[in-house]
Length: 141
Image 1 (cartoon, helix red, strand yellow):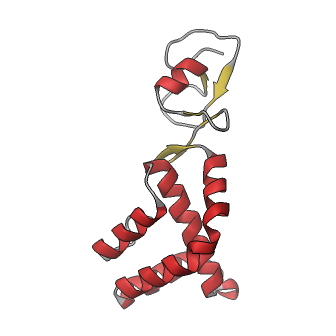
Image 2: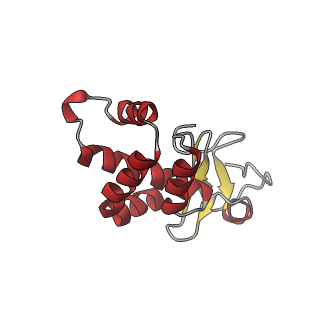
Image 3: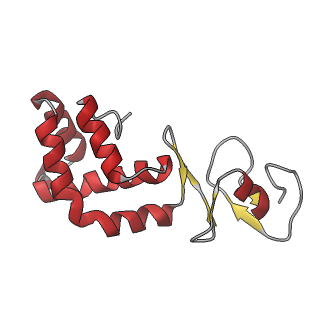
């Protein structure tokens, strides 16, 4: 199992779920290339076209911010034109049987958390970007 970056065959490897090379890296190369989470001690996964991040960091961000979903969703609904709001709801409501404000706010937190972790910004920064651009492209490119 050779490192995708330096070619070495280390005793300990990091499993990466990113494109552009083999699935293994030595820890030092993973750290140097920004695809290793020091907190959880695991390699990153790729979320194309956004970037890479640690899946555990996403999950923790979701759990920590679920309570903020309703307020973020209200902010976004207030800022977006009606046709964009309908498009956003359609993206969240893949099953009309579960369509609800609570469901949409949870889905919003999931998307915000993914993008915030990949882009190394706060959830509020992404909400602000959505509101300022009057577009959902910051979370649905």
